[in-house]
Image 1 (cartoon, helix red, strand yellow):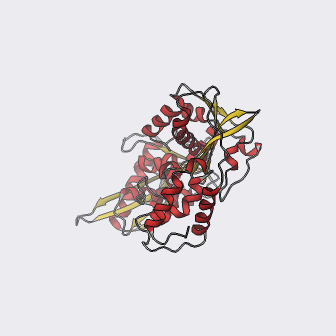
Image 2 (cartoon, helix red, strand yellow):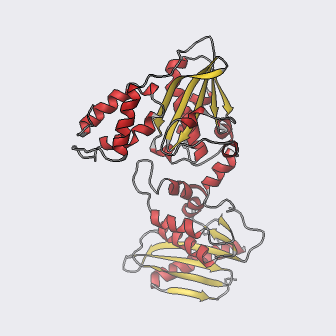
Length: 393
């Protein structure tokens, strides 16, 4: 069989080998270089090179090998070993035979873009869901034990992460926890699914397997593990930030930001070319972190957007390459990247949400009102202030 020379011929070849994918270990990973040639933006005339030619040769050789698979025996329970590698779901369906697990089928699939951007432990949850769905045609409701090196059940029942929507979480719960024939176990021995061939294939040892999935997921949710959303017990300084965008007397939009303390202005200024209050809020938070480098700092903001970026969404978007689930760029992506970098600079940091425009007399309300006043002043007057020490009391 000669190498395909057009996009259509690549599709025909993948269709042929895909018909036998059940008997080809790690089919999705092997086929990845060729799948890229079938996308809409790919050229119609194709010359296989490098990884593409290697993938073609490997898949062609797999078609010529006799599969070492056993027939399913429905008097015995099944064991499904699952693994996730390089955003691909890999699994081996086995049954006991002569004291060992004999493979009945191999399954593999590429995770969708949203699942591929999840933290490692949650990608394993997605891989289990895909593997169970793929194996339904063989298992047919008979008992199956799923072996996976992650605490899948704990992640589904106890984790409250912003990484997955309610619809996606419900889908995984239905497939994994809602099937009466499925039993989940954490695999602490050698998982045969990790032995399937691939570019980055490695044998996992016990040290790789032993970890707390909830802690790992929580770590991946925030830009730094020690960031707090309540005031620090000990502070080198307490900062109030605000960003504002308003129209001047000529009806022209102007934006400004302010970073203040209880004794005055650390920095505030007009943002030339910026016409968004959200961008102004991000700039204020970023400068507050940069001005508090190596310090213990509590930062108060009345922006739900900025607070959410720091504590909920920013790290998730960073892991996705600042792309949405549809593949389009995240709004203000570069500003968010700068903030996530700046948040690492303080020795300890807390970003605290406070109420806006309360007219209260406590120091938080006064500090927030002062930052808002300074940001508006700088925006309307197109000026920059630094180290202006006038008490807000």
